[in-house]
Image (cartoon, rainbow, N blue to C red; front, side, top):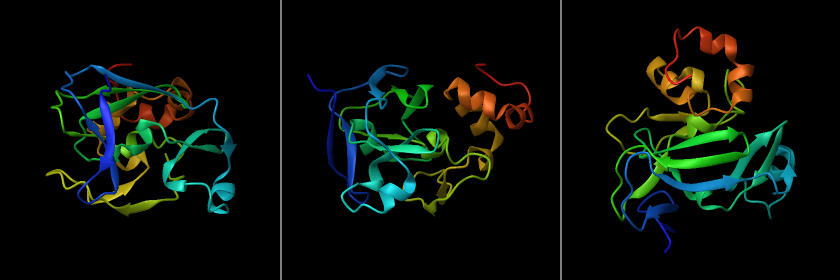
Length: 178
């Protein structure tokens, strides 16, 4: 049985929706981007056949065009899923809270935009999530988020990113889930 389906949302294009209930902490699916062809941002932007809206950073300045279910998960400032990264290109999606059948599966894009951290960001857009705690502007720089979110999202980052930004994370004080 399929656990999710890609379908049109009311106002955000396509999205990923639950076909059954999920319990908090339950594994929803695995994503391995290591076998996909890698491109630079310039290559993706310069080729209209490549869908930049479904590109994912996989490290070393490279991106892949990804049409896995994960690429259809829309952003929410109040997400119901989180993405745990084993390495940048291998991820698992889990339920952050109980999710009901029919509910859209969402995550916080900033938590996984590891190529954008510490002022390296090159995108920013108006947030369309509509949650009561919407941040209004969506960007990829984790260090621009409130400290409590930085600490919460830290636990799901890959070891390479935790090492790379060790000094910035140390400024947050004692980290939960280290």
